[in-house]
Image (tube, rainbow, N blue to C red):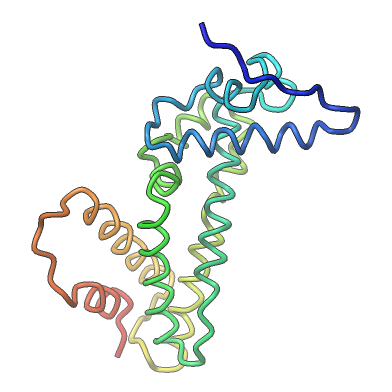
Length: 205
């Protein structure tokens, strides 16, 4: 039987630090590549605490994974907002490349974000208190794409008549490409597929 790593007791007022350590422990286990290993017991062991100690900070594993997913989406949003090209069409292309790069660089967190590791809809059903946070999960990152497609349309660089729908189509396309490149690495991917995908789905002129 394994026991938690020895850990000094938190001083009064250090509960926020322990909460952070719990989230970090879940992320470390997730990055290890085996989603089945991310359990409350394993998180507690990684954080160097007893499993019951988690309940003072999180009611269940879903609540921990929600924070991990929120932070991953926040990191994605920050990267998508990075390109500052004054030409919105070029910026949209750079945003799309940043999206695919993030998915490639953070494969396990990306899978968590989009349900391959953790089913957010089931989490909502199991823990109704999470519903509001789950409803807006990832919307900040999507809004960067939406806003840029809308700017392209406003400047005549896209024929989009419905930027929200076309931004959604682009998001779906990027997600599909990110997932398929991992699932079928031996497929003879066309060299200019990414550029064609972005241009067609965003209706760039």
